[in-house]
Image (cartoon, rainbow, N blue to C red; front, top):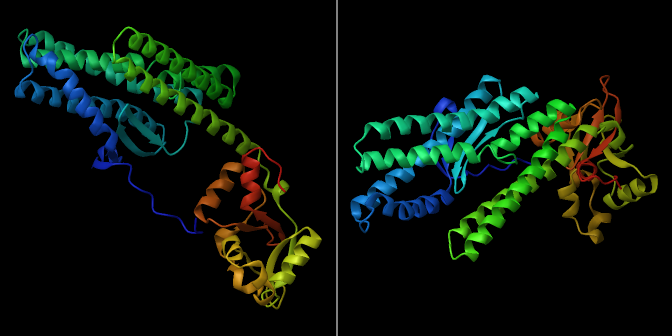
Length: 372
């Protein structure tokens, strides 16, 4: 990866910006829409064979179900915005939707409010659809569509309350454990274990249905795989965040060895290895003027390094490459994302250079390994 940010790819087809939030439809939803259409069409034609109008109503049901999922996610988003937490995007995909927050709620209460908002919206929509069904003529298209949406939203709300991440119930569980233990990461671990347990339960149900000749059990297996994969990924992320909070920039800083840009690269590297220090390029007055670019250094074959100068692999000092030693782990990552590089200069408030911070050492700390 180059030392400049790459453009982020869109997660799907843009649908609009309600509340200023970008909404996307992932390609996987198309497959879900087709499956729903063909699965629901017999419901609209019962007891007859589905015809074109029945498939049209089933397609409309699929679209309205997607709109219901969007409303569910916007429920999360509205509370998040109310708490002052921006939403990066909302994406509708094969197994539902996801509202991506820029950061996590800072308190268990905030976590609970954001989590419970989505299921409450789904239950509200289920109630509205049930009222509509009760007012429509029995057996007609309007009645069947409203009844389908009532049941679907009720199921959506209830299933999301199962106590396991990444489901809303897992976030509610995390909020509860976080509140009791005063530790967010303990809450996350509880939610991850809950998610994995729900995944195993879904897999068991799927296998039983398949064993009984019901091929719809494969759908439960897909859900189980989705839940297990995402819960496990959230568990790994929680481990990284826990290590992130323990990062001490001062403990990761390497002593700096000043060299001039005209020095042969091979000689500069020899001195750095011998001294056990990192190189910092200085000008004629001894003031720091650059740091080594790891990408440029890697591009120089070892046999050519005696004929290449340090200046050829140097990246000039810019504001983002100079870091204070008092950054928290989260602040450090934000600064590194803003100015990607392989090495950074660490300087105190008085401008005195304290050493060089390597992105490699930060990565090893996040992996739970000692710097080498």
